[in-house]
Image (cartoon, rainbow, N blue to C red; front, top):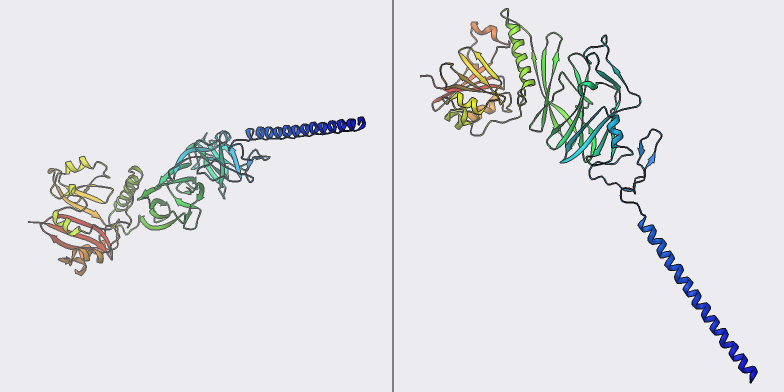
Length: 450
């Protein structure tokens, strides 16, 4: 009995011991599990922010290689393989500006490359590239774009050709056409010629603009005139004989990112000259047009991009061409007050006139405030003289059918040759259409002669 009792008590003891061991093991597992949870919780709290998740690998030249970027906080500017802190870009840039493209405001930085060099122009080296003491940069340039509130800028492009830039004269400018930003780099080639390289920002990238398959526009001015966000105009000066100017107008295609030559007009000073001062008079007239182009923002040399109003005959019958403010017989003084941005006051045989950038001219007598006649240049209009005749009807007279008098023979083919004339009458007004071949020179509206 005693043996059985002792055996039973021993078995009960062993079971109790096993239970304690099992409980201890369970507690150990629970403690370990809690520890693991705690450790993973710490890791979650120490995860980097969205900005810190961007992996950056430093390169030997200090630029950052972003080929391993996993995430970017940019909202518009596209990240590229090379980035620099904005603070570093500010220190290194030859040029920096803020620009707006596709309704996004950005920062642009233009930097010299390692192969470029900056020198100071000496007195002996001063020429069309710059004056003594100005800084001249020779070499390639590279562009960086950054968000306005961004801390880094991204390499966009490197100009393929070496350039020579007078950095003291701001050779790089940013302008806006429609909803796009245009970056223009101007390089002097000779005393009268420049090359303008252009880029635009589209979808967060800086893209070079092709110009008739070339990388730059040849011009004599750093200015580019924009017309209707569709055309740009510039001009060249020729020093060869015959010398003069050529206005060139390019059409802009934002989808192809290219400019194509749309119109070219040469203003050459050439004979035959029939009196001593004729050459000087022609040069002075052309120079005045160039001066107006540079002086007046709204003025561009005429090129065919508009169409005549469909109700042109009705307007002519009421005594005006483009707007009723300029009706024949109305007050010139009042028109000038309402439209102050004219090209100037000029004299012509038999009277004086004010010319406007829209191609209208208003003739007057100095002793009378009334507008005596209105003339509209045909240079801005697409219609041929045949198409204009369809609008206006058959003329009362066409001088093309008249023989040229001996007195006027010398005019044919010269700068003073106005071509032929169509004569019309509309109500109380008479109209003369000056034309040559199929090109409309101008439409002149005045009161009927009594």
